[in-house]
Length: 218
Image (tube, rainbow, N blue to C red):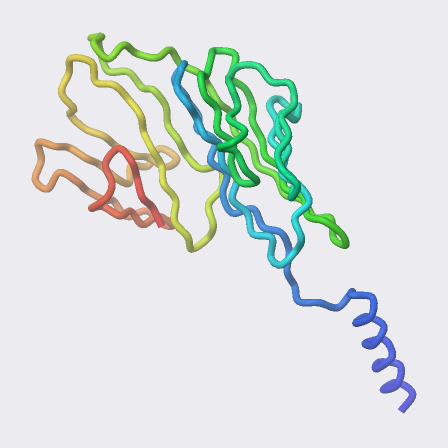
């Protein structure tokens, strides 16, 4: 009888203090930081998360470890930053928009999300950005790789989009091939019939109909 009473008392105390609760926690769902951007172009960085019922405190963006933007429930704040113009009106708790990117924009970028009391949880994600020279629309030349955009995170059971950016110059497109750890899993060859082929690889399913240079995976 005493054991039952003590167990009931402990349960009552846990409920009062909030220690016993539904198992929820802040989750980082996706971070979109393009690996390569063209000089002079706009670029948006995004950070998707699930508060899981917690109250938001702030979201911060940093470059090389130095915070340049903070979003709180009361609004956004910009700190000294060079390399591009940050559009405050088009930035929010989940993304920031840069315009007029220069060579100095390149670096390691990260977002960090914080929840309010009583838990004060936080999650963060990061990615490296390289700035390349913008090509003249009338210029000619050989094939050139501009960048490969791969999300920093993907949710198990969800979907992900990978984007390969390049210029062909004077040459026609022969093929686009996708690899994971040196194993080819998707190929596009316009001259073949059918032009698209998927090679089974554990953990990857490709939306063949929608994919060429942008790959839609689940």
